[in-house]
Amino acid sequence: MTLSTTLGKIYLVSIDNPEQIVELQFVPDKLEIERNMDMQHIQYIGQNYSHYHYLAGAKEIEFDIDLFADYDARLQVIDKILILEAWTMNEGFNKQPTRLSLVWGEMTQYLATENIWVLKPFKPIFSQFDGNDGGLPRSAKFKITLCYEPSKNIKASDILKQVTDLRFQHGR
Image (cartoon, rainbow, N blue to C red):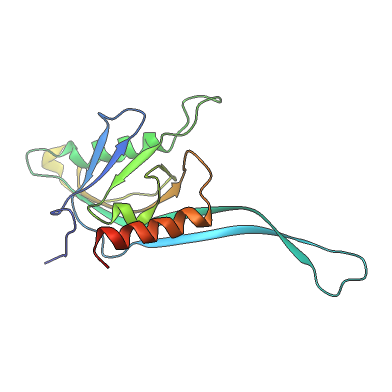
């Protein structure tokens, strides 16, 4: 039995178009969170060591998704893949990418101070094809990466405040 923080359901919701929802049927085994930063070293004449200047940073989360279609609804897998694929595409040169909200039970509040993400392109692997159902797949597996896209600059002090707020909320 898989541990579930959302009663077996995790959702991605389009912030820009809230009726677009993709339910992920299974709780991923792991969630990888990566925070990176871009630094530029600045060299000064006569200095033995460079000074470093912070340029920008990024936060990404990555997890595996398994989709499975019911016997009477074989298009479920295809529908979800197409919606997710559309979220990775541009709607024109002056439009921002589709912003998503990740709903993952209480885990959601630990992932970021604002729940705004952008989906990177992914490679689904379809399987369990059935000739009796038009050759549609019964399942798909793939890894997705969500990139954090906050509406304002998040500072280190914002993250430390989030830690304090979460400790207070959980009585620690």
